[in-house]
Image 1: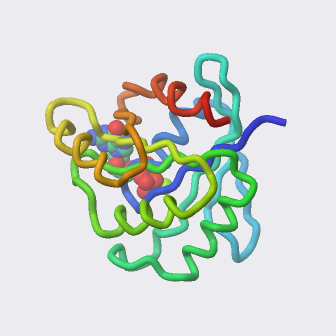
Image 2: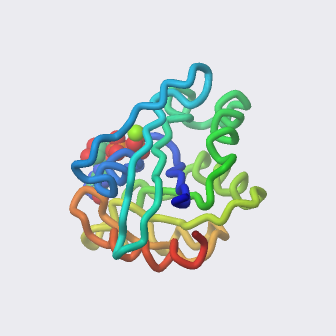
Length: 163
Ligand code: GDP
Ligand code: MG
């Protein structure tokens, strides 16, 4: 069975853009399991021959962006179960927010390996965000631009040791 990699992060960091980039034109199946993560999408991804199932989540999207409600946390925990790795996406342009820090803290307490992905890192505007993301304590960040397709192949370096 292929490993499963879940994409996690607060709203608007580019999770779905990354998902679409990884899945390409392949049809994304909709998982409409009621009461679990709404709009959870599952697809087949391949980076340089590394094949995995990728899961897009929307678990935090309806909530106050500065809080981490238990209900949403529970939904993401369900999604995390059975995942072989998580890609935690943050936004290089906006910088880290309290919610990023809270999700990061929470992920550090989980047993799943985490690959830190700094999206929107194209151009000079993303540089400080990439440096700032080291403070999450989740290892070396991988800068990408999901929208422009830059750096996505570098995710291989983060993923292959853990899946
Ligand atoms: P999600 O809420 O985390 O799923 O984020 P989305 O994938 O819906 O993207 C949120 C916004 O960020 C959209 O307007 C995207 O076009 C934009 N976005 C996504 N990836 C990039 C990127 O690599 N660079 C820039 N500048 N914008 C991006
Ligand atoms: Mg999304």
